[in-house]
Image (cartoon, rainbow, N blue to C red; front, side, top):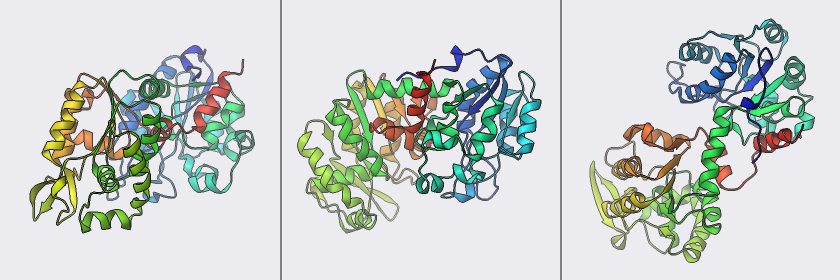
Length: 413
């Protein structure tokens, strides 16, 4: 992938438009940001551009129509960035209107301005993207781009987590301005391309969690292309693989899977098990909750009398041995119901094994990162991706609108 880095551009005194992803979870009770990880991940590019005396303007989204309680202004984001950078980040409650444009014109070298939430513009919300399918060139006529693009010399994108979004702020400015990737975007691509294209061997993918569409969208590709030497399944992914292999889980677990239409993955699971019998590992024992007591059961002794909530000790130990020998580890999804002490053992022990392993580990996705933070020091992970949907699409081989736009921009002299 050929994407220009902002480090290759002269930004001194230039007006630079920086698209970041600082979309953060909002506490429903307090209305305040409850996790500032994405803000912190954006700091290096912001700091470098400001130190280089760019006239720096940040644009970002927060929430969407699908998670309306997160659809709030970026005023608190500006306050937190000011503290983290130890430099003032001005904020204006306008996105691309007259007030925002005037504030941009007044910027001095080294100053930073954060505009308000992009999702306050209809053309930036997900429902607009799905309903009105515009090309990047057509998006240059949107309110956001036609108002802001003439004010800037350079566009920088550092928002890998939104790389799967075909929105004006992500793909249209590249049509009009010299464009480059920020430090975080380049780091994300370096880490993920290392996993997806040329991983050190043995390469182990740990796929669990509840959102098994993510696991299955990756599994076929990484197995077919030989990216993964071993796939360790757990969570609902592991349960579906067991069902596909003919194991009866028990009424509670099977009803859970069918009620959520996850039985649609039984057919591909069976195909993968047949095609890659030596590469896919499924649980050999599981655990369920018996009135607050953890009960483990060999798979050969299933069905279980209660919902399966975790992998069992024999599976944990077998997986830990594989992780200890791995040179590359990619993780998506926890091993069980880690929020409950009864169901947390598998997740806790696998994360501890990954943290202690000598191999290079890459993780990403909201629930994956949340479960890791609960049990280990995140400094023990090789790379923590900010991406969720973008990460999965990248590793599944699906095109990402942002990367297509950045590659096109890089070809322009």
